[in-house]
Image 1: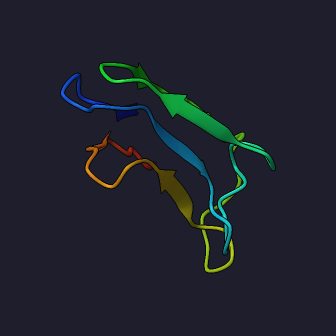
Image 2 (image 1 turned 135 degrees about the vertical axis):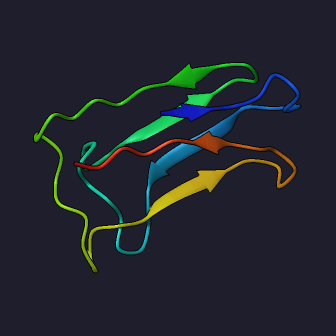
Image 3 (image 1 turned 45 degrees about the vertical axis):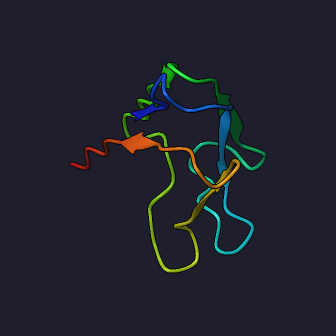
Length: 74
């Protein structure tokens, strides 16, 4: 679950990392969160394993935004 607090001034984008990008959400994954928005990704064994070459997500914003992240692994 990712949440962009309402106090953010602009959208923040979460995407597959350019280097060792996590592709469990899709090869071209990118999702923009406007201030106050949140998104939940429930993969239920459908996402790829996290490993040394499949692990990074990139965040793109103005540098002053906050992103709250909650990850449950099982």
